[in-house]
Length: 351
Image (cartoon, rainbow, N blue to C red; front, side):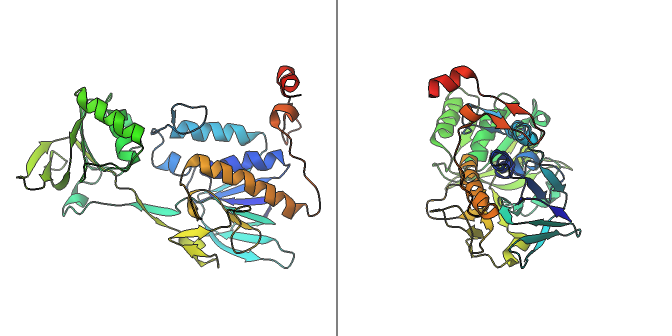
């Protein structure tokens, strides 16, 4: 049996950052993830997708963000159980929890942090009768390697951040990029909408709204898509790739059977305190939780992880007072005995 201070279910960005925040408090973490590598959706779905709202990074690829988070937490020597799904959780008489995976691996800790994001997921597919005939033959529901679109004709459908961001990114990669959305208005960030509009004005993106892709043509692979606009005759647009980006259908999986309070397929938490669930000692942080005003952003998950670790410290060390120390002053102590001191100039400036 693996024993630790905090069992983290989910090795996405929020789970990985929890390792660092817990490490500052001298708490050890072990992460469980059904995927074969850390990073969650950032590694599995869009490692080459640029992210624009991480502090200090005007732009960073999702895969690079994962690498940076792993590097940041490495000094605290986290444990990993990868390629296994957290299946059951049992509370022990001493108040601790045992989490068992689908392969029978058991983990024990006084605190459990669920950072599983959207849980298990599958892409939302457009209602096109023959779309499954072209999957992996020009139809892709996610972009893992942008270079495969180099000098190719690409049609993207969708109106959210992913559709906008990939249209912007591929404008400098593909020979042509067409973005099709069923409305004139987009759901993504205003900045991304303005960039798409600017690229359209420059002739780098073909924008078709309001419209939908209603059929696919091809002989063994995608060769064209049918574009239908309201009150107009449908027309066909030649393309090498059709990428519908309509989001994911999330499923909590076994977590839904753990006695946690669920709302809208997410775990309810007390955001006024520490993101604890209805079961004391079990927390939910990141995209998988819900509370009034919840925003599903990576940076919000980082904030939630920080407050959760403070509460976890009190559970693990009852009655022991913790004094918050800024890393700019105290430095960072690793489990390997090393210590990174804050620069003297910074310490003097703060003093």
